[in-house]
Length: 333
Image (cartoon, rainbow, N blue to C red; front, top):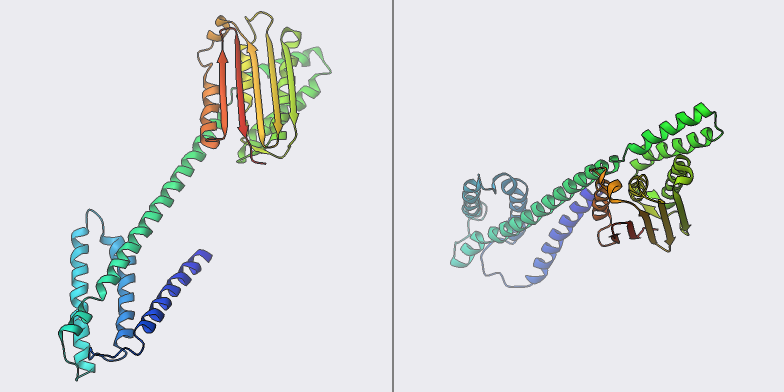
């Protein structure tokens, strides 16, 4: 509603300025046309009506590839009709009027610049509307794509953890209750927090820590896990579930057949910069056991390209034994 009134105010201001400038320009200029004094005011009001007739009906309805042949004759008809209508009214209301070469041009040509201005206005208005529609379409597509990418969370971890919970329940272990709490916190984050456009770094770190602790519970001393987390800005915004695929990938392929498996996770947030590094060793056999090993990382790269264009640097190093991902990301704080 505010935008509508603002646009109306702009139009009104433009026409007021137009009448003011024409009045100033022709003030005290001798009238040699023989036209009535109020002719210019009335005719310009008519020309303004032609402006809006073309802008809001003729151009939108007929200026296209299918109906342009209607639009052009309509414009010609308006120009010719305007001339004869003005001439007829002048003869009726001003019997002393005499048609000369000067006032003939004054009667015929003024509608043309108004119609040209109306055409330009309509073309710009149409272009802006199409650009806005395209932006909305891209935004909807982006939202749908991000929801799809966010939903591609590997279910393997959940299945494995439920199996571990069953084992803990059978042993009547004291670790069952805190493990269930951590798992419920993770599920809550996955199901509800990720519906927001952005999460906070502190929540993302909490999710990572719960994930790592549950994996430590699962593998025990069979996997050497080292973590270094430093966060100086808890409220910095970050895309939810952005970092976890790198850690999932390390646990998925950095264990099993690897000799003395180890996983190193370093996360530092200073100022508005996030540095994230995940290192794990692996064997070729463990890497090739799952054909979908690269899907998670491709997912993250797509999300980074969509949400952080020009604001991130991702490097992946693989020497056949050790796999390292290094992400530097500019956050909004």
